[in-house]
Amino acid sequence: MPVDRNLPAGVSNGHPGGGGRTPVASPAYIRRDVEPQLREALRRAGFVLLVGESAAGKSRLAHEAARSLFPPHAFVRPLGRAALPLAVRPAARRRRSLLWLDDLEDFLGAGGPTTALLAGLSTAPAGRRVVLATLRTEAYRRFDAREESRLTGSDRDAWRTQRDVLRRAEVVRLARHWSPEERRRAADHRQDPRVNAALRAGERFGMAEVLSAGPQLPAAWQNAWAPGANPRGAAVVAAAVDCGRAGLHRPVSRERLCELHVPYLAARGGGDLRPEPFAEAMDRTCAAAYATSGLLVGDYSQGYAAFDYLIDTPGLAPVPDHLWRTLVTRVTPAEAYDVGLLARQEGRSRRAAEALSRARRGGVAGADFLFAITGPATPAPWQPGPDGPQRPWPPGSRWRPPQPGHGPGPPAHGLRPGRTGPFPERRGPVRRGSRPAGPDPP
Image (tube, rainbow, N blue to C red; front, top):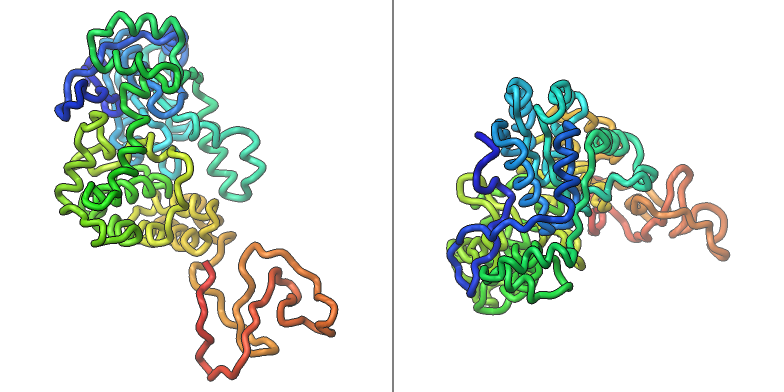
């Protein structure tokens, strides 16, 4: 389809004025100070990356610049990472095309863009075939040179592949806070109550941030947990947020959210919260009470994802084990690689091994090595000890020298040759084939 259309996916209309719940036309576009730089980059470079914080106005700015510069271009938007190679082919065949990669972090990873995949688009003269992408600042920061020293093996190889893709792009940065000149241009549209409300918000939030209702969303989510309010909806949002934080970059089906939210609701009180029916929970979390997208974005046919402003909310609790455990069994091999990589970085070695095993069986490149250095998903075997069978010490524990008074040989909390970490003390007879009760290592 052509670039000249109203709004592509990812561009928020802004919340309705006057507290209304019905979506309305998008606010007037207000020119950003960085727009001339973005236009010049689009004319000159084949791959342009617009970087900014969540709800800074990246998608709207990118779309407005593209539609004015390239009205005759074919607009090609892949619906997910798996569809990217299929989208590149028609984009490369067309004389004029624009490949739209809004929220580039959703495409990076196993099966995602590579320098070789994008090379076919860079052979045309400047401005003929363009890749235009947006990326949140937090995601872009993960490819800082300092991050490389923290990675090893295939982790580093995967990181370098994605970094090399970003290096091909000409980067344009968009500030979250609006300049005085931008605010003066916005004042020309005060008749729109949404713009007027954003101007009244002062300097605390960016104009685009307020227009998309980003600051209100975390508060709305937390308020929904109140008994009799929208607690089931809050649990659904929690599940969707953690899916994104655990490395799942595609929308989640309604049926899957119905399954995933249950432990979140139970952990907060379950029936004591007087939760609403699931259908009502979905309606309310997707409604445009604050933003056109609501707390969840998507629809029944394509699935649902948490509004990305929520995923970046500071102070969130770690992703719970039940979510990792369920995701591992539900994702594709390519997605399992992403989930395993994040689980490994978060110290969830057992879930990482399960996910990487799934990726390995699916033939995902790099999964073999990463699985090998992560270790098997099964609990470590019980081993004989001076006081009966015992587990190996937790992974990552440091060696501790024998303490005075323990005598020769490995003490109850000492070490065995070639291993690191403390032995848990276990006593008492153990029958053949049995083992003492105790938690498995993570």
